Amino acid sequence: MATKLIYSHFVKQDLKEINNWYRKINKKLANQFIQEFRSKINYIKGNPFLCEIKYDRNRIVFLKKFPYGIITKAKI
Image 1 (cartoon, one colour):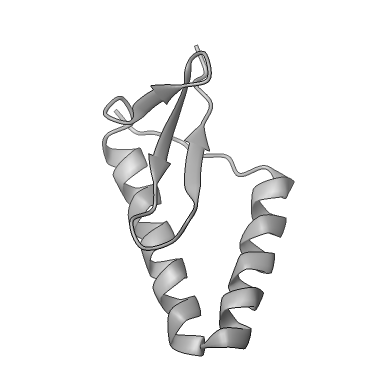
Image 2 (cartoon, rainbow, N blue to C red):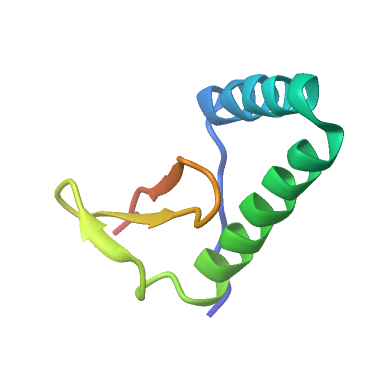
């Protein structure tokens, strides 16, 4: 089953701000953030129902190294 992810404009803006913030601190840290974010997105695509259920029917996956989570909204 192929999972299609749609990013809201809020997500795109947040990613840009987070990346810029980490880049000001350390370029390598910014790259690690993007790499971990992409890894979690791939995990969600491959295992959408293994993510923790929160907030009604929405699911969440937390990044391990960074203080962020990715919330997915289920389409039924």
